[in-house]
Image (cartoon, rainbow, N blue to C red; front, top):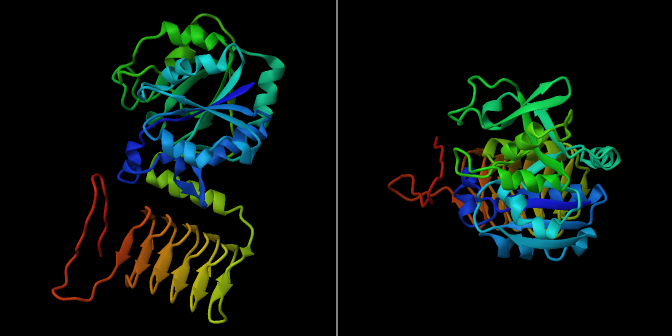
Length: 361
């Protein structure tokens, strides 16, 4: 089998961060989301992997390289525009040929991996296999309707689709992992753009169902996260951090206290601070007179001085200095400075990009 990882989306729900960075490279527990996808596909025994790329192609290629670090061969496949998942499949047809393949959305995380499902697909050889999960907000996803174990209908984002039933007829969302044989190309060629003006993978799978092809489903029981929104990104970070083990490679002074599972990278200095895990701190950070609370990830070169941070993700070379209160439930991009000013007159002084969000005390 081959692998196809989609990494061409624009990440509009994570703007302004994704104006300057690919959403699939936002780190969860200090590792880019896309790396988890590559590892998941690799762990299923698939080493020939295509990555669909768009406007952020150069950034994706710099981050992932040839794939040697994972023991895989990566092929980058440009998509002219983000015209839907089925369009991405069509774009990748020259790479995929007639080989069965796994399609994995590059901003998804599946805790238990996909290895048993890939083995079942190889053994039983259906034409398609989809992963499903029960969700509280099915209107925001592609939704599957089942009769027993048989998939009878798929609807894309019923909360937005004017032709969809209201409320959705199922709470089973499509997880961003699919397995197909070459018949999917017949389906992709047969469908037309949807109400979103995209070629929907749900429409392509619906075509397979209507033509009598063997479409199977599997309902996953472990956690799965689509990390396209801030709340889900922070939740994914929390879930990953729950599995870390303590590893202290930095310099922690006797006036500091570490509680729970904490990872501190090389070159990082911790002075007169309290860190309550699970927390991961990258290399060459400075933590002074600070409190770092649970479910926080600080990337390389971050400075937290006389400040508090909890349940947040702070990217590389950013700083929180003397802020006098706690940063919580936050995502801070690269090279950002958050500080408290003592000069008069007292005021909030902000420089923010489009689609920013700020909460003030």
